[in-house]
Length: 199
Image (cartoon, rainbow, N blue to C red; front, side, top):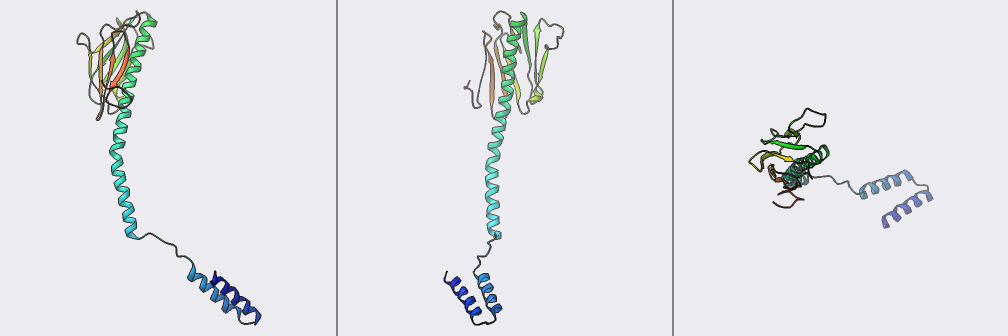
């Protein structure tokens, strides 16, 4: 504040005595330039520290992201199987015919399941319906184990009961999910991923 008053006083005295005021303005400019805060930049060390911290945080978050993505993939595959089994049961009751879901286990995307009436009938545009494992990357239908040692389950038109109940197991790198069909035809999921009861 005192510096400002000093400069103002200099200007006034320059005008008062008709001195060369441009010399005083030069002094003012010089004083302002000296007292202006310098713009701070980053030093090389500061930049290297920021890059190192960013790299560490990125490295820590990649495994967590991978596990979360894996959870979403197995969740999607298990929910699709659950939904189709419930739909097959509803179709059996609606059509008044047995509907069978046949599983073909395999690794990665080399698995599938087919929903069709039993005994097999000609296609009506709705059935048969086949779902391919390639729709669910990183999810594997490892086993399909149903009563009688078969890889299929059949829903009866009478209340949708199921004479050959059992389990279809879906695995991924970090998680496992079981889609279970009860003798009453009810379907549920249990497994190691979040949001479901453990088996």
